[in-house]
Image (tube, rainbow, N blue to C red; front, side, top):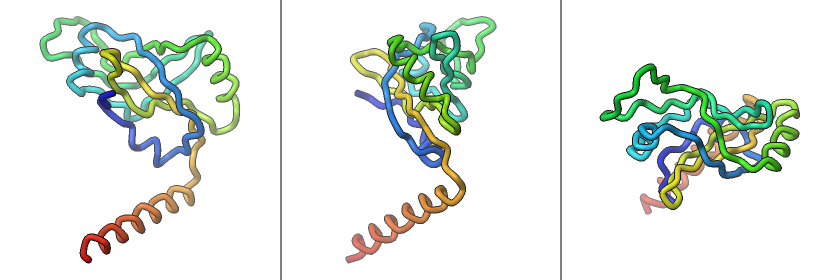
Length: 147
């Protein structure tokens, strides 16, 4: 498994309760662009509409050698999940403050996969606590390195 990109901001803004893997429907030049590492999950999210899962607002720039007209890099892309998974996720996200978020994009056996997380939004004081813990860990590592 080769990780192409991670959505680091999600782990700061949300508490991830559950993770699952999904396939993604792409154009040919999008596949080449993603394999080169050209994808951004910043500000993207997953929604369920009419029994199908969709990835919204993920930015995949056009492949440098592609000749595509009227291509929208932030187009909505369909996610490939089993129907039971979609039904379970749709019932989960009905709760208050719960969102489906893309966590990372990776290659697995030549296929591009996306990891989706069920996230619960953090409050401001939770974010401060996360920053405090991260800074404490850095201080400990620095102290150990100096000895």
